[in-house]
Length: 353
Ligand SMILES: Cc1ncc(COP(=O)(O)O)c(C=O)c1O
Image (cartoon, rainbow, N blue to C red; front, side):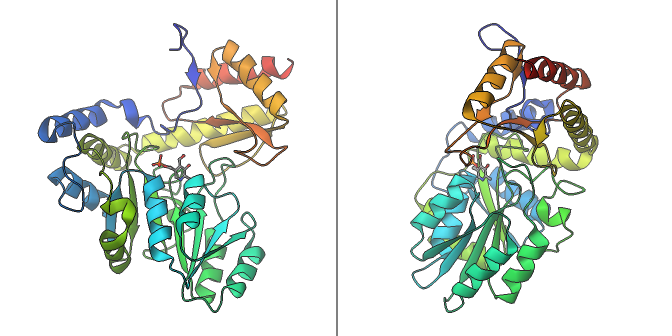
């Protein structure tokens, strides 16, 4: 509801509809009652039973040896990069990586090499340039938030391994929604346990308010626990969010129909928009970017849709490269077929404006 008007939301990260699910809300309430509204002490000094349960659940979910919780994925990304990359090291980052990865690179004391988006040859050249450095840390989004597509992880992993580097994948937009059981891009590509370090957020598919995590080998996580400034000197995940995330992780496995509904919704929306003649990016998940070119065109279309009750945000430079302004739809399992039909009808009308 906005100013008394009901809109259909296509700009939410709540991909599976967990944020308003009664089980998730009940778990959040229970955690709130048990631990209170505050975050208590700094997480370095101790955690609650609910946080420990979330860590166990995330270990199972990510299939990694250990997990460290952060108050956001922004903190997790900055922590991993700034802590692991020292003065003699190089971090290699995709040019379209999320801003928090860019900030992590800026904080790191080593050199940063930006490689071209999803371009394996460009990454290979960067790795060759960094061959005398102590550590080569390659960081990529699993699913790119503005493009909606997966990174080619198999190829990336192959060149990273050849160069004896370490790979970090930000699963913020893929955890819960990509791969047969929603385990993220590793599962999507059939890549086994322990091949890369993962970062993720509790704030998107898990619908759990706020929070982030790093999952990876025991020694890397232990090093972050000891050294990461974004872990040591800041507050932890609120218990209410940890409780909500535990419930969401359970539902992901006990209600696989949600993921199927999400996928069916994506297919319906993408094919509908394509048959209306819109140029779409992505294709690997619930982010559906509609490429429009100029900022003016994107804003005009977003406004017409809003007037018809459909909320779809427009993105332009500097969030996306100049000349590639777009609308970004985020599909959810909570959308009904009627919601999608209404959105498609609005796009058909707005196309003519
Ligand atoms: C790829 C990616 N990484 C990290 C983040 C930040 O996550 P958080 O909100 O938990 O800081 C986002 C949020 O938009 C994102 O899209």
